[in-house]
Image (cartoon, rainbow, N blue to C red; front, top):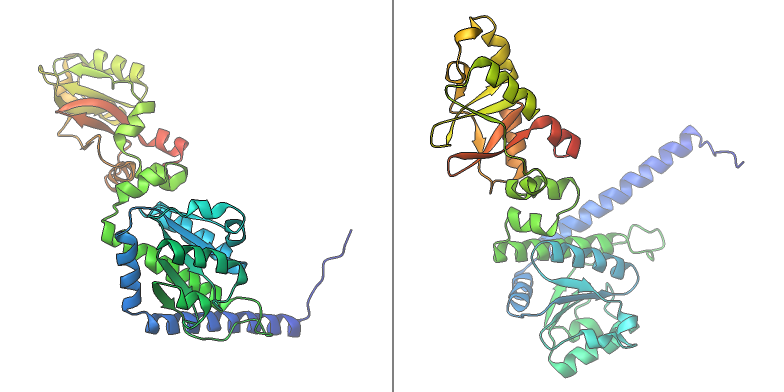
Length: 330
């Protein structure tokens, strides 16, 4: 078994200082990038917004890895996009470049050999290219309809070779482009949820109606004149710690919870009706609300459950325990 290396205090201090210097360089690079952002980004947005097809992102090496992330961000925020490796384009994947697409090409130097064939293809077929590069006079810059030029800053690599600050700036510029496009499209949180159905994020943006698809059982209910024993039986059978009290027309009049039952025992329960112990005007939620709204209502009001109400009638009951079990609540 290999023994773990233990650095000396001086070595630890030197490594810590080096790490901090890299982060400072990255911060300085981003600050320089912010100062250079100009109308070219708006022109890039106009080009993309005017084209009906996909944004095809491409780049070689580290730029390609960054390009994959940018494509994913664009796709999840309302701009149809995917990444294609430039070398694969030269071997048949140029067929993915339909006449209605826009190409977003990434290269710090702008001279990546693998980009030449795709760029020439775009020129021949009238496909606009948006470039992200440090060299607007490079082959990439010269063949781009819009060039998003990054400032020339030192790489954090001591040899000036490994892409570090340049890839960070490329990523930041790609994110900026995606967010501006998102704003221009009016892409909402609900739209975002439709693109993120999985995980905690997607769950929080899920609508209550979608949640009800898996939890469709109608809530236990009793009429206003139900006896105390009938209320107890309904809550027990419903197994949600609460029961809906309904008006004669089926609309929601109030709620009786386990807590209401315990407090009722301080009185003569033999003569009590549901109307006597219910909480009137309970907190409810619309089926088109987001599940994050439900969680906010439950936690802000310090309650365990609430009814989903449509046209005045309760259609489901949400209990915080089942939301915690399902992962809606951390």
